[in-house]
Length: 238
Ligand SMILES: O=C1C[C@@](O)(C(=O)O)C[C@@H](O)[C@@H]1O
Image (cartoon, rainbow, N blue to C red):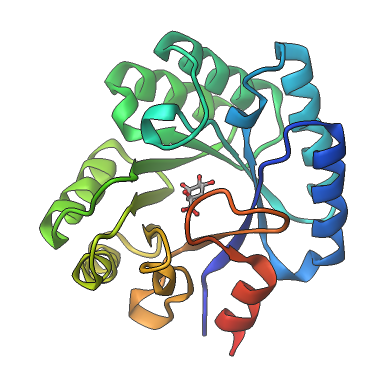
């Protein structure tokens, strides 16, 4: 049986875009299990408006039994977030404290101090940790990817996600074999993504090579190679 959960990534910047995404997601309600809110797209907004947008998405989808991931993807890791490390830490702590979310995405390269601080706040508010690592330029070999998952396991969290950009089909294979081996070591908490056209197969992998989560879009892709959630559901069901 396939156990990969489908995440829909929301990237709307303003009320109109967010409402359009909410409408489209409600029309495809069976095609995803989790909503990812990308807080970095609200970077131009003040704190109140950022919070209002996050809450407006949570308020629709929690009652519909969808889990929520809050992600603030920094520019260093391919997002549009330009907050300083101090602001990043404060934002993640505030979100864990104030919002009814299930998972907080923590970039493992953000440093021990931030990870420890967000870990403490997340535990106090029953929020699970999704540790993440992204490289939009290249892909290490299988051992290199396994060392990223090992670092995550040394820190500890409920989900470990690593996303890389492939230059060749061998790079894609490095991701799938690392996922397969990391699952043996750490269980069904590993997510491996090879981005772009070349890596699309990693988003619909089944069986031993499957990830705990796969990320897709409802209106527009949030990362190269993302697939519409309806296609993900179809591919993962058949
Ligand atoms: O890390 C990930 C995965 C992702 O980058 C992707 O390739 O689908 C999309 C992001 O929104 C998410 O936080």
